[in-house]
Amino acid sequence: MASVRPEFTYDPFSIEAMTDPQPLYRQLRDAWPVYPLPQYRSWAIARFADVWSLFLDRERFTEAEGQVFARELLLAPTAGTVPVASIEPLAIFNNLDPPVHGDVRRAMGASLMPGSVNKFEPMLRAIVNRRLDLLEEQGRLDANLDLASHVSAGAACHIVGLPAEDIPELIALVNRSVARKPGEPGMSEDGWAAVGELNAILTAAVARRRAGGLTGDPRMIDGLIAARLPGRGPLSDQEIGQQLISILIGGTESLPKVVSGGLIELWLAKDQRAAVAADPAANAGRAFEEMIRFCAPAQWFGRTLKIDGEISGQAMRAGERVLLLTASANRDDREFDDPDRFRWDRSMRRVVAFGMGPHFCIGIHIARLEGRLIVEELLRRFPDYELDMEAGERAISEFQIGWVRLPIIVR
Image 1 (tube, one colour):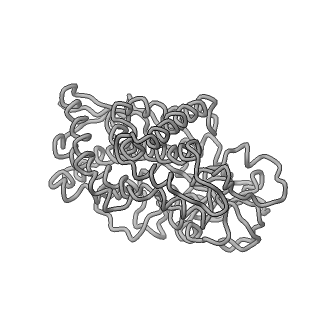
Image 2: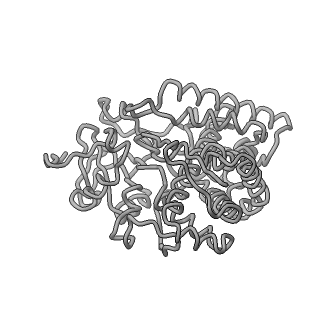
Image 3: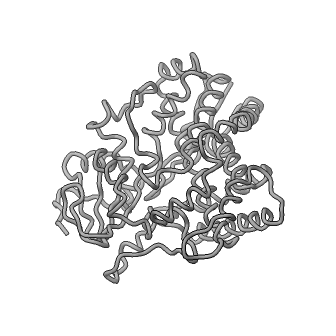
């Protein structure tokens, strides 16, 4: 692999990259758009156009090693072979390749299509307003833990068949699963324990559905129970539970960080907040799209190269990994005008926060609905909200960076 110039160093697992990576991304885009990481047999891709095109590359990459690489995986010696996704037992659907990935995704996706998601609006709006009622009573509420997390977890529980009374427990388990030890990348021992607890809860939900019970919308579990994949038998309860984990964690964790970051931007730019609040029903959706671009917490998604080839003008070998720096791409001035400035009414052709291609975020439609409703109802009821930034807390992570605590104050 190519060597790196000594005057600049980027390591996705460094404290700097896990805390405040945007200055690093700016230098990568300007001088090293394809940056070698020889210690990890990997490359980092920083510019929007390259990230976009590689997301759409269906032929040269595999997801068998996952989309978020552990540092230990990247440092481990390789056997010289390209990994293959497990079909039996079935790997989590994020780690599958076409055509099996598409088969599993279609089995899961009925309740996440736009027509189905639109029917969730009354339920989600009611959850938002119940949380805002609490804000009004108390005068203070955490934007992540007490507002957005309850909305996103409420939707996820409905989709995977868990009762609403489980929401607080599930928020706590999801947050434990993604929390990092101070200064240490990768999942902690407690994080893996939380995943085990989630898996037990969801596997039990599948068993209840097979017995004819379950709350919420059963179509995702029913689709996975009915799924028949080539070369193997029906999925077990445990395999189905593992697919649901990605829905529950992904559906609960990311949106609160986007909302929290976006509420900060509107609070800092009071003219923009006033503009959105002038007609929240009309403006909230557009404002949330800019929140996604500006505040999406995922820093990168990984791919493993299946064959030798030229990637973004650089020769690469089979088995090497590519880190698609989505948080860098969404600040690329080659794609966005004045990208480091939040503009609620920005016109955008495209954005890569949700990924693209066969592995684009399966929950994209419900995430947009949740975010729009939170912004709309908050600004309708409390257009002059304040934030207690000193009591806020940001996650330090190689993957999801964002506000995990952010108190809202209303008077």
